[in-house]
Length: 368
Image (cartoon, rainbow, N blue to C red; front, side, top):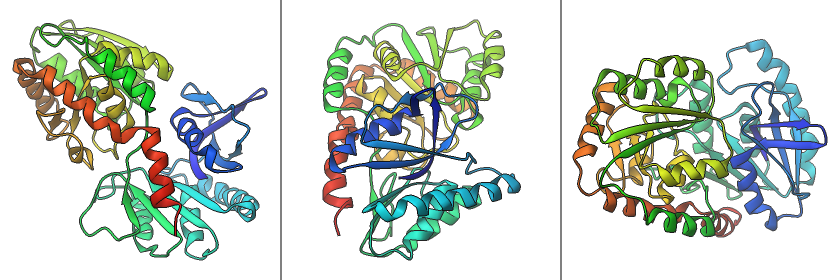
């Protein structure tokens, strides 16, 4: 696997980005070994999980963001990426890249020349956004052009005129057993009185957390909204902590980064997941929360409306401006069918299980 996903070593342990660890763990039964080329974390390693499977071997490469404009840093990293890819490629029967990223870009180029191996390129960003960074758009263009029998591309959502080798694929985030437990936990959720809001994600401008706080500060929300829980860390965490001091109309709790198991407890007790993002692919937190009957309130971007129907199994924001968020929350407060919306939200999560994911990988991706 060729990616820029975060990895590091701490003592005798190898740590890696938890969602990808879970995803590869679901696939490991199909391979004798998975070699994971990832990029070293220099700062926050709180979102990482120990890789405890002997079948998954993590190789730590230099770190460079796919958004990086530091030309020198990029130039210094690329020879290392090429070295590691060529070093481990000869033993591989299958190659998986996770785009958009600098390492994946090299893997995509390589697949134009290699007819020997099966390639699976996963594009995690918005497949159709015209405002994507140049490197994103370049990788999308190349992926569209890879019309070879040994290559598959998976993207978020179904898109008109997509070539036959491009598949709509859900990002797995929950096991079937976890989904059944979550559904049972959701059965006791009460939507008749007070409502708790939840934000889960990276605390950055793209995720819209500051817009959400502005909506709460500048608009008097219905008294049914009593609490907002903020789970995650990121570059704007300090600003968020300063902003919440000015808000007294709702209780705000900042949990910071916590483990996936602890996040489930927030999904269990909260009623609405707030994700007013500027851009997305399809965030896993939507399905994770929905499994617990925590209703998604999300911006109508990318493939999200292909799964969320406004007022049926969630609520869609036409944009992520504070006024739009406040208006939507006002209408939700008056909605008498929230319990039904919650139950419908649970239903669509069956496509996001690891079992469904691995079955599709075997029958649709790793075939020629």
